[in-house]
Amino acid sequence: TRAAASNRGKTWKGSERVGRQRQVRARGFKFEDVSEEGVGVDELDLFSPAKINLFLRITKRRPDGFHELASLFQTIAFGDTMKISKLASNALEDEILCSDPSVPCDKRNLVWKAADLFREKTGSTQKFKIDLRKEVPAGAGLGGGSGNAATMLWAANKLCDLDHGDPDLLEWSGDIGSDISFFFSSGTAYCTGRGEVVEDMPPALPSNYPIILIKPSSPLSTAAVYKKLDVTKCSEADPEELKRRFYQEALMASSERKPCTEHPQQELCVNDLELPAFEEMPILLKAKEELIASDKYASVFMSGSGSTLVCLGAHDLDENPSFEKETQDQDWLAVLTEPVNRTAGQWYEKSMELRPVSK
Image (cartoon, rainbow, N blue to C red; front, side, top):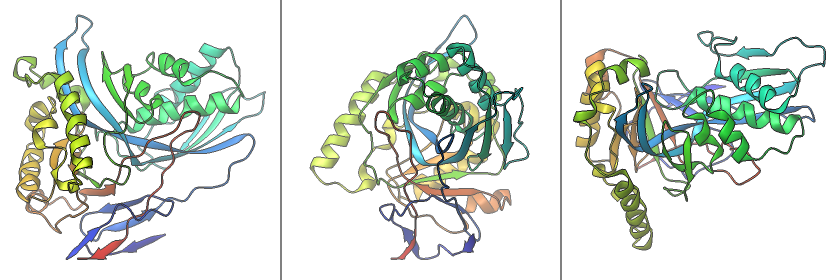
């Protein structure tokens, strides 16, 4: 179902959670509900979360062409839904259906690669049917495809009643992508190497902490951003020190009952990919500067290689901001969300609905 609501003179409370995620688009603010369907013995209906990088340092370029990174990752209650079921034993290949016609439903898809990887690692011959309902846009820096691949691996292991634990799935996933491994953490992790070295961390933000995602309709190519990256121009901040300060200040904010708009500080949310991304898409810099100048948020930064900007600390967004009018892009995406974590042995669950509340 769809409904329209204006955000003029209103704010959103992230603590009002009743079981499904809503997506908002600037201008008209269309809400889209994604409800969960039943789960059968041979079928799983799972949430596939997106992620944000609370900070992202690029420390060096490796001889193999990849870059060493150090980043604090966090899963969020915005993502895709995947219905995964077992096909008959005589099935010759997996079947992928996707709500987004731009997403390939063949061997180019990370979900297909994850199913192949599962069979390679376990010796299973089981084929799967995957109904992928996309919400996370491509080229957003939100790890949508990586989350889908991780969800596929986890589901295949459950559906085939195998006892491989998260450490196995985490290790395997590095074979097909750098960010996939992170999703086998609890939902908060400090990742190094290419992103495949995962240190599970306590939640970095409270469970109902308000987050806004802002994204223009145009995607950003990860390859194009990395091609423009000059490591000598990256931040000199020590990522270990960023991590220490992030948790130290979070503890202080909690003990002193500070408002969400006071943590994390802007200087902690470093992203070394912003400079090349802003060169590739200058409107992102203007949007970031305007959002910071609004003085509504604890911090504003880009997630991953873009093109999504993240506003932390408030579910409060101006209608028709000047950066939107400047681009004449009526399809800027605005998503009101919050962190989500999981417990061992279970997969992620979306858990929120945001309702407009008068100031």
